[in-house]
Length: 211
Image (cartoon, rainbow, N blue to C red; front, side):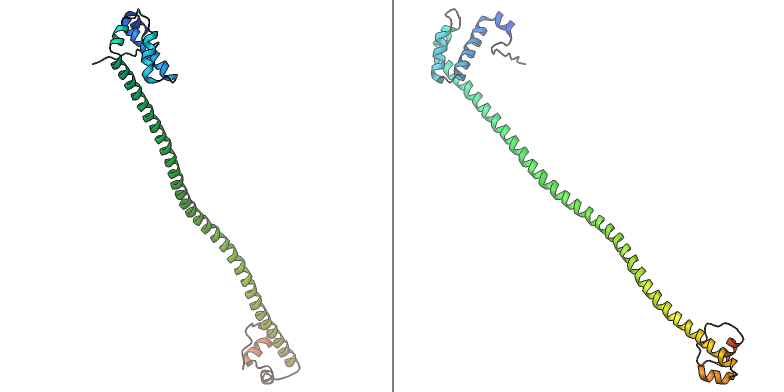
């Protein structure tokens, strides 16, 4: 197992104090990064930092002796960091775009499902309301038609009753005037049996029997 330590500025202070060359290298890397962030030309950064590096640093002669390798190492590190930043940027951009697409698709799918569900619920509700409304309208129409039909039948029945009563009164008057049963039957068209019932005060509501 390999243990890795962060030697960036301000990290692992105790370790830096115990290891001079490690502290000096950390100082060198931090200074290069500061120049890089300030926009200095990459190839000149190592030269400038080596000029500023105290002569007391043990690693200074080594860095100067292998300056080409040091420059290549620093540039490679920055290139890797840049690629990592680009990768993270593209990854975040892809996440945002993915969320946006997912949101749009989710909204579209939800809209379709909501529309279908609303349509189904609307049909059921409309059916129930239509049924209640139809029942109410049917009752009103049935009541009106029943009233009309009842009125018609009532008029007919009333007419029949009135005619029956008129015939009954005619029979009684003719009998009182000493007309014979046969004469009354001939005049009114009633049967002899019906006439006898009227005379004998036997009420009948079916006296419209033609002789």
